[in-house]
Length: 419
Ligand SMILES: Cc1ncc(COP(=O)(O)O)c(C=O)c1O
Image (cartoon, rainbow, N blue to C red; front, top):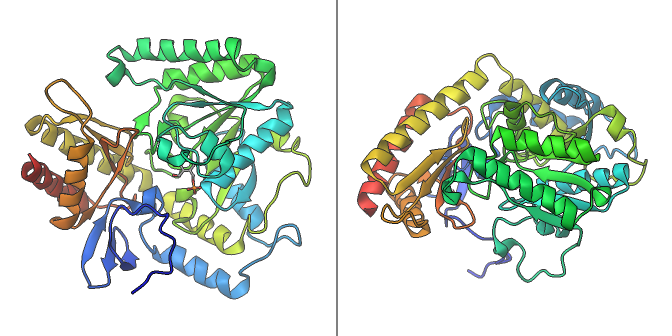
């Protein structure tokens, strides 16, 4: 049958799914798969969490679209209040949009308006989205940019520390990266022309690579010295994925702006940026907006999601399951030295594959392992990284001990079969 769908979407699998529940998805032929992709780190509460479904159903009967420029609906303020409770201290005012890219665009527009400066600094290996501005800010793979030139100007790229591949200590790697950022400000984008630094506290698409806390703190110092806004892109890391509500908390840095999407509403498309009331108050009225931002069903889904994420013991489960996963993967790595690194906090775990002789990155093995896990073990995984040599584990945050154990058995079998 001829397809009526654009062929532009890359497909990680050829599965056709008809339903999802908890950590599993079911295909047309009734096969169940353990979904450790979470639809790219989105279904934090699992597929179709009953509380999220109920909130969506209830809201759909009241209002599907209550456009913010026309009137205000009753869930906007409660969602702002709830976000203020869970985001870093000082962030208490929010703007809503629909996707991660759109929220990142909003953060850049806010920074430009507030500082009156034109440029932004981003970090090598980052992914910020697929709109023109966010493409210009994305350097995780050229596939996201190729063929789309000219991209917006005013984006400068500083290094992201990676001690493993630089072959130096973390301290040395951080010192080099901070030095390079300072050099960028001396040579390419003057502080008086730099509105913001935008960073993922843990590179997502770029390979599940955490930024050392000392690097984030060093950047914040540079930002504060020059009146540059520190923007944390927590689209993939946010909403408990990293074992704390937001990954930036683990560094002690309070960002000026935080960008949120994905896990915010268990899959309903809503995104947000947060900043202090003082900062948001400087965003000229009418200079930004959008038809669907703050959609009532999105707000209902987000409120229900946050209720689940803040239930007693939720974060403890994320951390315990993450520990179980990392320990198990490291044990497999002892038997299979193709595993060069197991990293990432909470349930944002990356497994880097290398050639044990010489340490070259091994994307080919990653492809084989992911295919074997899917076809034989019915476990869904995705890759990450500029070289595609990282398997990322991003299960729903409600994942059970048994499900983690099952995934480890499937991984072991995949490694044995592909050795
Ligand atoms: C860190 C980060 N920022 C921004 C985005 C873009 O989000 P969206 O695909 O919702 O536009 C993504 C998506 O993967 C992301 O991981």
